[in-house]
Length: 327
Image (tube, rainbow, N blue to C red; front, side, top):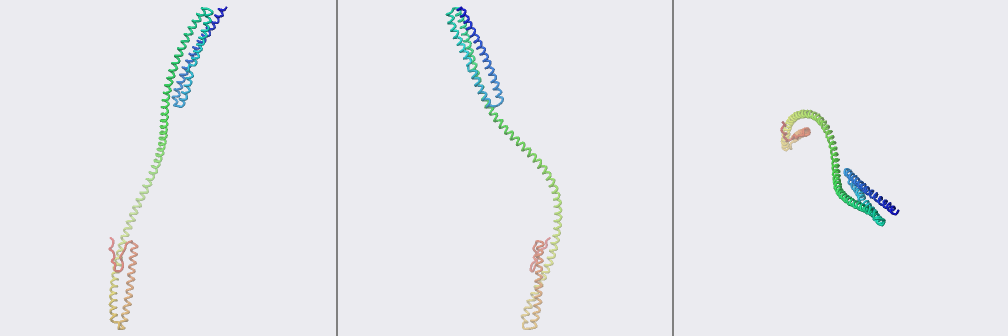
């Protein structure tokens, strides 16, 4: 009965750790598959983020994914599995000591089971080492990818700045094109106005030519009239000059007569009859002198009127020669 109880106890102790070990291995495989899928998802998200050209969002996602990867790849689960295996190993050791006390057969079986567990434990340790190496390799690749992402983010920022600059230049060029179109419209409008102005100028020019020809005709007519008037004035002036010379000659003769009369008066002062005659002659000479002076004044007024009418000076008056006639 004691041996049967010990055998049942051994069976229970054997079956339970074995199931737990198989569960740990499948769990590790499942965890490795989950880590691989998480890695693929992260890489896919990195590619999507890289295509979105949002450096800040990429950096935030990288930090978040880095924390997730650190949590996933910290090895805590494998350490727990190793600890569980060690606990199981300790249980096997304890059970082995009990089986040795109960019987060599059970002890041999337990030793075999123990050796098998040791091999499994060694396999688990090797798997943990491989996983640690894979994690370190993944972390190195992740660091390389992060550096690459940082470079790409820097390049993205440079491209964003370049795109912004080109956008501003494009907006400026659009504005300049719009201003150019407006200027073209204004030029077209000005061309139309210029064309109409040219037509109007041509009409006014033709009218001006007609008016100029008419003005030339009128000027020629006036010039001929002025020439004829000048000729008439010169003839009248010559006539007046002849009259003035004749009157000057008469005045000179009268002065001479007056001088002779004064001499006669001086010679005949004693004679009363001579005095009366001299008085009459003096009065007659005085009248003639007044008539000559009034005539000279009239000639001077006529010369002034001719000057105001023609704008030219005519030397008409006593002891003045007239200018030569204008041809």
